[in-house]
Length: 94
Image (cartoon, rainbow, N blue to C red; front, side, top):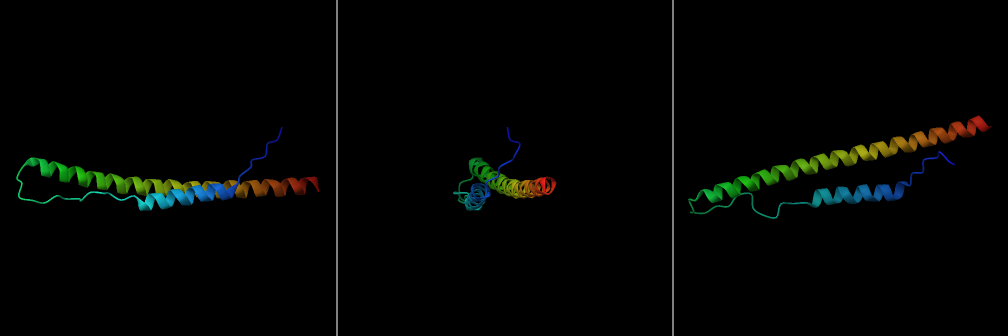
């Protein structure tokens, strides 16, 4: 049984990069405000929903970007730890 942690950085980096591109490409596909002579409260409600959606989308993008950055940092720390353990193992055996 082995206790080695195997990290394959290329697929991880590709997945994170792909997610980052996806996060930045998401855009609201409707106007933030509908204008017109219509005095119904419906337009006000739709505009408010659109604004709320836009704010939530921006917050989601920011949180996802933050999580992706933290994931990259964690992966880098795991690789550094793995390398340190490998060096220690070589030193100990030698």
